[in-house]
Length: 291
Image 1 (tube, helix red, strand yellow):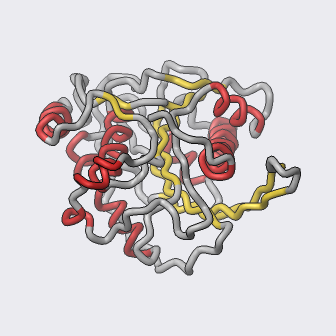
Image 2 (image 1 turned 60 degrees about the vertical axis):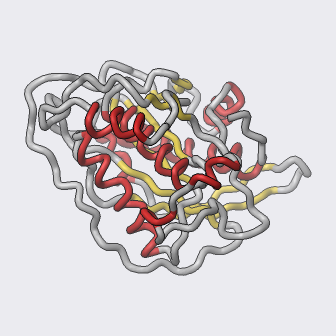
Image 3 (image 1 turned 45 degrees about the vertical axis):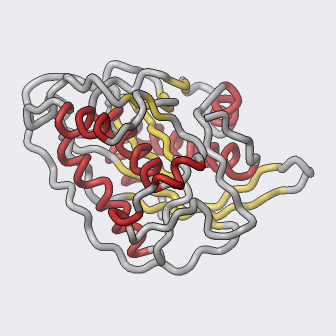
């Protein structure tokens, strides 16, 4: 999604080394966040500004079903470089980002993953509920469409036309090929007492998300990620998890294109609220996925 105009130079998206992180505590949730670089007429991409504005960690508590307060510490790992708005770069870089994360987090996979991108025509914030395999016909900043780097490869792998957040199936686990990602674990949890149960955002998810944000903000669940790089990175991330036989604990957040300080601050609040919602709905409520 976004504005389509003259191409502007890309920003390098090579992963930058991070120091090794200490082991997680039993109530700590790890979150990986990415944002995009400039593209076409969007000389500044608000998605990376918002991602970069997030704190390294925060705590929050909310009432549980047994009327107690469950406090969580959220540890955020924002990929330090904006990802270039190019199909080949996304295909090549995302597995490297995951490998880098595992290498600096004792081989662990993030509990939650959020990719952020802009949808310039949209004045609202939307969390995407699905991603598409096919029809990436809009050219990227390198003048390429997404067929060779996406649809063709994914069809050859036997991946479905649509992927959604959800639990790994027995077939996913059985068919997973760990050789291409030997540095990653095959579980989304770091303890036996915490279970991540991702599912596509629904009305309940939206209600919880709104409860964590100022009332005047327009938040929506979308089924239109756009058949461009936002859709592409979402499907890439979901398919990577599926091929590894792990839960698809991934979401995509579309934000408006404004990049003024006030826009970034609103986006920061929305992103933090989305993280709290994922923890509440996917971890603390332990709802079963229908995916």
